[in-house]
View 1 (cartoon, rainbow, N blue to C red):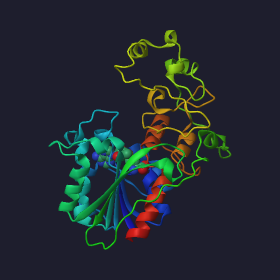
View 2 (view 1 turned 180 degrees about the vertical axis):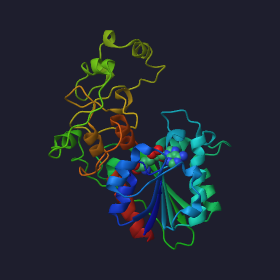
View 3 (view 1 turned 30 degrees about the vertical axis):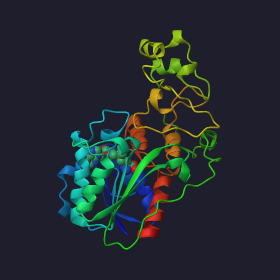
View 4 (view 1 turned 90 degrees about the horizontal axis):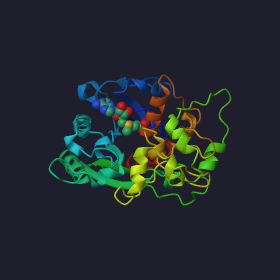
Length: 331
Ligand SMILES: C[S@@+](CC[C@H](N)C(=O)[O-])C[C@H]1O[C@@H](n2cnc3c(N)ncnc32)[C@H](O)[C@@H]1O
């Protein structure tokens, strides 16, 4: 089972597929900061803009993994969709699929993808279905939560599986696991750090540190007294209805499941505050929330780049569940 991985990042998705028995024969990402990490854990990666990679240069494969950047479809950012240049990265994947004709192609994207539209106003999932059909693939897609598959984090992602239409098999998404009792923040942070490993932590800004001091375990900015808020947050507090009652500075408690780890790792929007100490979670702690094994190394990048690549990743264990199902149903 030979796989090409596009938009590989530090390799969360690839780690899961590798564990399930897929052989990653080519990986690509534009960001030089992921190279050392990817190569220390998985194998060679080609650092180039995918737009500049000729499909004839790539080896044959049975599967293409495409963790296309989520920004154009994210609710958090500017939802430019296909009009955004990154939206066209989907077309780059289609170009390579068309040349390699793998059995299966997998796309991963944020929840906001489901309500995004292309530049003709067509819902993105339907657009992708149409594009794939034109190239001989049937599309299966579903919104899944990583915590239903053993990952200690609530992270909703759309998984789209294109299956070449001569494959005589149906894909069924894996069933959620029922017991989530072990997935708490407390369980994740109580595990000891490997001997000799230094805790690497991205410092909070002085303002975030001051705000954090007012927030108890399990709380949020709602616990911060008005006088202690910076002017921007005072303005929002003054008119919560207008701003739709945002839940900034969420500090998850040890008995809760962690919220979505983000690439930006801002305390305001990502639940990145440690429950007991006024600091961000460390690189290893967020890697655990993303279900990377403790022997997965993050190297050759700045601390904030590490937060970014980990936040961008598909949780490794979530990827493994999907990979096992693809292997069993389609290979
Ligand atoms: C959502 S992340 C992928 C995460 C990865 N699948 C994982 O599981 O760890 C998207 C990646 O696309 C890469 N990227 C963005 N534009 C690109 C381009 N034009 N060519 C190649 N890679 C690109 C980014 O550097 C980023 O690492």
